[in-house]
Image 1 (cartoon, helix red, strand yellow):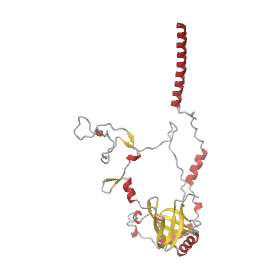
Image 2 (image 1 turned 180 degrees about the vertical axis):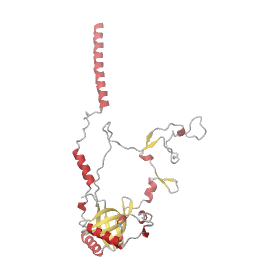
Image 3 (image 1 turned 30 degrees about the vertical axis):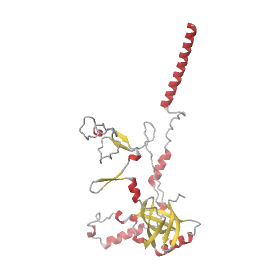
Image 4 (image 1 turned 120 degrees about the vertical axis):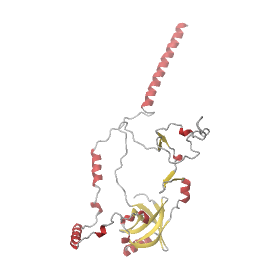
Length: 310
């Protein structure tokens, strides 16, 4: 069992049900890492700015683009920043504390916002999902469904009976409960519905997030479909009708990919490096040891020469 992503309660009327949410789906896509074939090392990504890319907005006065005590180029017109005379570098790392979030508005203006400003308006984490209304399950088009979760009662707190009461009542009525809650700082519209002998929670797209297909089907309503054509199409649908069995619909590509990976020999492991450093350090240690031995021999020769001279 996966770890619960949220613990709280569902309330409808005066009934309060302590519950936990668990992810209902588990994507099994094969994810690849990138490696450098020349060195065998993992490719990493860094936060950088490109030297040839122009600035999108004026840097803050406290930004260390130039020395703080000398921000103008000697001999340049007053107020000319030193940064204009600096040769741009190919890429410059950006520290996390120097990052700022920005959004380009529909009019083209860029606005920035700090983490503190975002925290000031962030919604508080929900402890309760209050069912605001019940709607017919058939009225919710699947396009509104975003992500599925299993809802489980918290054991030992008297949640089992009201949990099953809600599940069986909604199942008998063909209805689902609509509510809202905050998960990981993001507000969600949700549908709580019966799923077999349990409850499921579906996060929903908000109404203005679902695009209308009207533009895609403009003009099609004028096309004529004959009764004979419609009857034949229904016959074909009935001929292909079957019971929904999810196990029949496996990801054939993923299975072929896994079979390919299993058939390939493992990449040759990198040569083990002795504790204490890499190749360069090893070369340095070899040189140091040789230098120590040479110094000892040289010291021994000097001692022998001093004895002969004495």
